[in-house]
Image: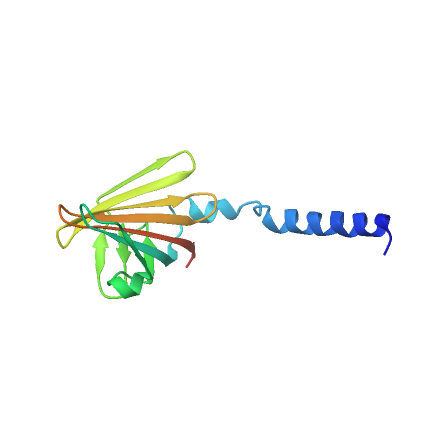
Length: 137
């Protein structure tokens, strides 16, 4: 294969990758705080004061693997319980949700363009941080 053919192949691959990574028009409306979402947590960290945080799978440290965010009912349901969304705010590019449960305060931040999420649960002795992604459901 000559240099020109390699260049054409690389340009074609680059275009294909760029097109695959482009957001689909209208897809962001799925993350506008109106459509119910199913979220999968894929990474978690467990932290105690004065110690290095431990990285684990969410289920290995008692955190939910899946959550359903119901904006209409203002609830987040995990695999074993449901919790009310006590506060919700939309800021550019994200939706912020907060609440309390079982002696912990929690925050969940949803990227309103990609559906990626970050969540924290904290009390005076312990903090959990979870990362994941949501899809309409």
